[in-house]
Structures are given as structure tokens and as C-alpha cells.
Image 1 (tube, rainbow, N blue to C red):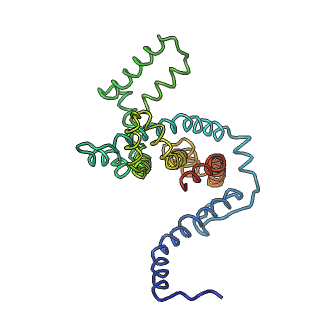
Image 2: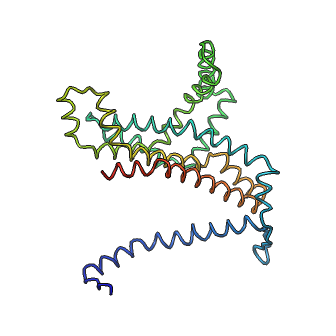
Image 3: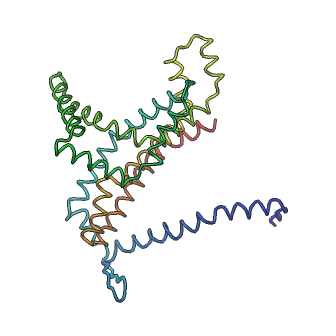
Length: 301
């Protein structure tokens, strides 16, 4: 028989349930139900009737076959997204690690600089980033002073790198990296906080003992800082991958949005979103299976 809860335990359980209840209601209404509707719409032809509302006719795997064999947009955009993730995720993680290590040091104005790194997370939305990106591109095309200088600087950098004895692929990678530096700094706020939290959990006595033994800063980083932050770095990698896959500037998200709201192909857009979500789950699941157990076990030791 289950032991009855005491008065204090019962009140605490009820209070916890009340705190969680809004999240559960929001999850059921705004996530689970739309998710189930989207999965159903991907297998049915959805039409809108202004008198009777939505009407669905079961079509089976028609839209999935169209997505994979007829329309080339899905596979082409998926390839572009995967390529972008492959080079952006390491850059974000490296930049966030460097910024977190710097912000973890004792110096004047540390709180201000921490706020500066996290400020984009608070004030910037996907829509605003899209507007700023479009404004930058338009100003560059029209010959505005700021936009034109950016294009000119990237052209000069590309010419300098092309004169060096390196391959064209490396030149393209370096110019893309420099061009994306500002964008990467804007998207690194959460990652900086995650790694900073991991750094603050490392006991300071380890660094003191290492300095007594004659270890330099480089040795302390690779022998103490990096191993101590491995679990948080792994979480940062997973978060960054999901963040880029679901970014509003993502070409796949734009394709799904255009098919649904511009071309009014609701069922095809639903099939795109379900297929894209499954690919994200497979990638994240594979990463968790391959590397997650080691990092979780190391964090518990």
C-alpha cells in the first residue's frame, strides 16, 4: 500500500502541480494538438471552405512522395541547411567558449559585458533579424555607405586570400566565416551563459593546486577547464544544432512558411514540416546516443 502523504508533503505536491499546470495546459493546447493536426494534414488533402470550415480527404503518402521525388526544393534546401549547420555550430561553440572564459575572469565591468552578450537574446526576435538582414542587403545593393563598405571589404578579403597558395574551398570558408561573425555573436547569448555556468561549477582549488605545480594558463585550460566543461559543452552543441535547425532565417523554415501561406499548399507544407522534424530528431538522437552517455556519466562523477 502506498504511504499517505503528510500534510506538508501534500501541500508541497499540490503547490508544485499548480505551478506546472499552466505549462501542461499550454503544451496540450499549443503543441500537442497542433502537432497531431499537422501529422494528419500531411496524410490528407486539406481544403478550406468558408462555410463548413476545414475539409480533409485522406491521400496516404502522396505528399511525402512529392516531397522526395517530384519537388526538388526539399532536398536542396535540406542540403543547404546541413552545410550551414556543419560550419556554423563549431564557430558558435568556439566563440561562446572564448567569450565565456573571458567573462569568467575578474575584471572591471564584468557584469556589463555579460549583459551585452546576453542582450541580443532579449531584444532580438527572428522577425527583427530578418528585417535587419534585408536592410543590410538592400543598402549594399543601393550603394549605401555602410552596406557598400561591407561588400567592398569582403571583396578585398577574398582577393587577398585568393592570392595565397590555398584552395578555393578554404577561401570560401574563411570569407563566409568572417562575413558571419556578427551573426554568430548575435546567436551566442544562450551558449555563453551555458558555458559560463559550467565554468563557475569548477572548483577554484583545482586552479590553485595547478598553479602551485607550475602549470601555465594553457595547461589549466586543457587539463581543468575543458574537461570540467565537457557536459555543458555537449549541451551547448545540442542546443545550437536545434537552434539553427529551427531558426526563422532557415531556408527550410522559409520554404514551409511560403508553401503554407503564400502558395496555400497546407498539406504539402505539413508533409515538409513533419519530414524536416523527423530528420532533426534523427540527427539529435544520433548525437545523444553516440556521445551523450559519456558526457552525462562524466558530469555525475
